[in-house]
Amino acid sequence: MKVRNDITTREDIELLVNHFYACVQSDALLSPQFSHVDWPKHLPIMYNFWSSMILGEQSYQGNPFQKHINLAIGSEHFGQWLRLFVNTVDENFQGERAEEIKTRAQHIAQLFQHKMGLH
Ligand code: HEM
Image (cartoon, rainbow, N blue to C red; front, side, top):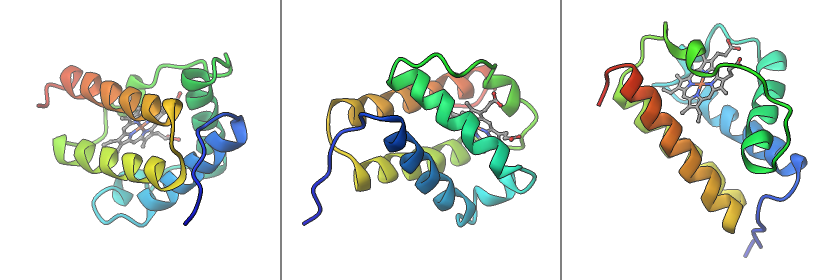
């Protein structure tokens, strides 16, 4: 059985982000929302975002919500996004930070949905 360690380094975050967006790109519901995305540009932004959230790096500066305002997404997209995110974390990591990153993602998704008037 594969031994799963906790998220401790930026390399771990990069692996998680790469796996997650690979799932997103092959997901029938979510992939159309990402069809315009410039991946070589977007992925490093996401490495910075999650490293800042989880590892205490201060590498992300931005306004994430702003990027989502004009997307045609509903609660079903957020539900699927979270399912894929949680699965990707669970398949690769186990530990305190692995739990924390799932909780953070869930809270941000809730906040986005609240701001968008979704429930
Ligand atoms: C239905 C769910 C979601 C969809 C369809 C979605 C889609 C997108 C898209 C299309 C972008 C812009 C990428 C680009 O133009 O390069 C983006 C950026 C981003 N998203 Fe999401 N997203 C979703 C949920 C979330 C959640 C729950 C989080 C946080 C936990 C999140 C965090 C971010 C961040 C940090 C950025 C980068 C913002 C920046 O450029 O500074 N997204 N997302």
